[in-house]
Image 1 (tube, rainbow, N blue to C red):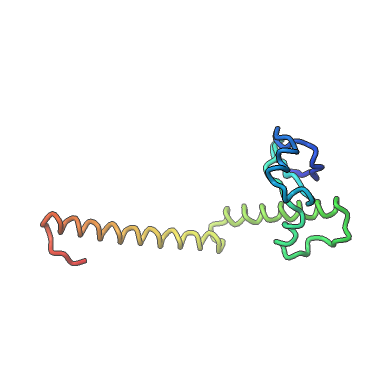
Image 2: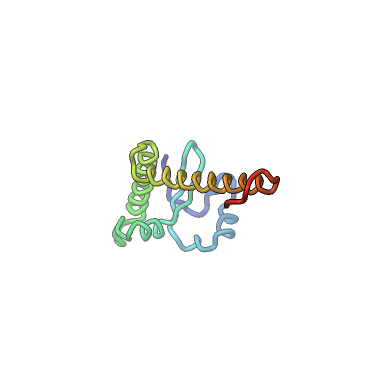
Length: 131
């Protein structure tokens, strides 16, 4: 994964810059970086928004655009690594929480199916309704 600062003249994956900006007019006056993976642009990120979402302390306002872009890219890489690590470690809280949610959903689904079976059995005259 790598990045480049978008000059807003270069096309993005074959789409002319003018079309990209027409579709996203809020990007006209922002500093953007293009995230490139396997030779294709996979993400377009607004440097200021990433900084704000990270608490506003990734860089100083006096930093050059190049320094800001590098710090934002480093933050994006770090976030991705943390996400990959949490997904690959079954003991992580995120994984445990996801498993709990799935177990609860399965339990609810089983209850609903049991209830439906009982109602169907009752409707067919095979049991006393006790639902």
